[in-house]
Length: 204
Image 1 (cartoon, rainbow, N blue to C red):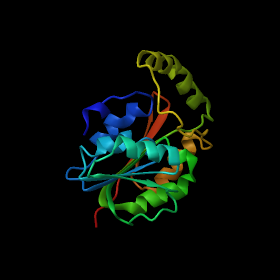
Image 2 (spheres, helix red, strand yellow):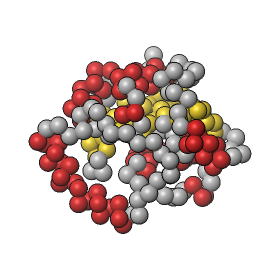
Image 3 (tube, rainbow, N blue to C red):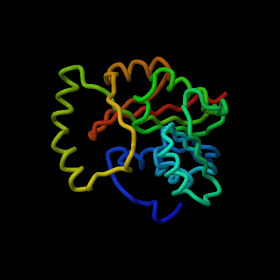
């Protein structure tokens, strides 16, 4: 991993990177980052996996990712729609996605990630959702000062041109759909307005 990539910027997505990297299974061969943006997480994955692939449907983001990873022998980037791209079924030991799944059909994307994962592999999804219940709004309001202060102190920023979209699913909908599609999935809600799903695909 290049030293220049260790901490080029910080934001509430990058804040989840350490936890994602800790989830990479020992001896990981192939890792896939869905919605890789400028490739920061994919580059970091090469420190835990033998090979890493990033996919994103933004030409500008993929161009930047390829530029930053120029000459890296174990890193590849694909420009295309994750739901239809030619990716190997059961081809990855580790799949992750950060703040991307709300840009797609949630159930279709989660199902495809499940299918692309090898038996015994690990999936980590970090996402955004809407508050729809008093408890969800209370949690958001309580965390708001921490989020604001953290962003200021860490000088939060991200790569220019990153596509943005508002989530349409609630936290409850995310949790229930994930539990249906990924039996045994671990759901967590995080302070910096993100949730995470961690799932280990049963070995054959």
